[in-house]
Image (tube, rainbow, N blue to C red; front, side):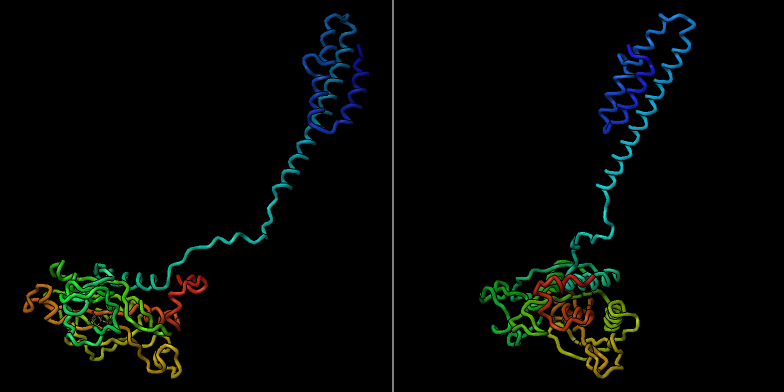
Length: 347
Ligand code: DAH
């Protein structure tokens, strides 16, 4: 059997050559394990004479603790190397550009409709919808449009089916106003609704025309409604939509389904009338944004209402026009081309 000194010299040499965790563990077992060489030496102690035992024990213990210390030194060095290898492998370059995760954006028409709707909902209006394929009756006759009204012309309107009965003839609605008829037939006063949606006219596309476009219709019917209510409501709408400095102006106009009728202008939110070259108002200081008026008694009667008791106002605005003014868009066709560089810019 080797002496503790022999073991010590040999172990120092072998541990010095160890380069990995597994061989360090093998040496630990070889010297310090249950059947290890140091363990074996310890077991011989009992058979020694008492006077030899102390010196021998000290030698064995010294060998044992030295071997433990050397192995510990090796294994902690291996652990440190493994850790720094792992850190190097896991290192992230915080300057590397991130992945481009495309965020969705709302279409500017959707944004404008939502904003208009929010303003009227805050005034207590409900949002209702009507079909895009409408009866000729709801789109024209019930709205008091005379049989010779120019908008009825085949070249202006997309007819779908024709019948002698205008209630059975259909077309792509030319305006959201037929929702007025549907609402009056479905609800009892007080009626307070807006209705956004698509409209269709046989127009050739250019910078300001599109055969498909959007309107928001409004209708309020109750007892004692006057033109003052109309003006107050639309004036408040203009200030909420275009800023608290916005002023409004009502110009007499004609619509078959309102009497009196008006067009509403809003003061130019861009230049306020100060810039003769303004791209929004072209120097006039005013921009036309909607048509409106007091609901014609013929329309209320079609809705089954007592026209001595009820009055109301209505309005209709073009969403594209408002969005173009508000966002400075110069060509209506941009809304429908689905170029992400354009439609992704608005929020
Ligand atoms: N429907 C009209 C158009 O398309 C807009 C309009 C004008 C709607 C006056 C109304 C209104 O409700 O009262 O030109």
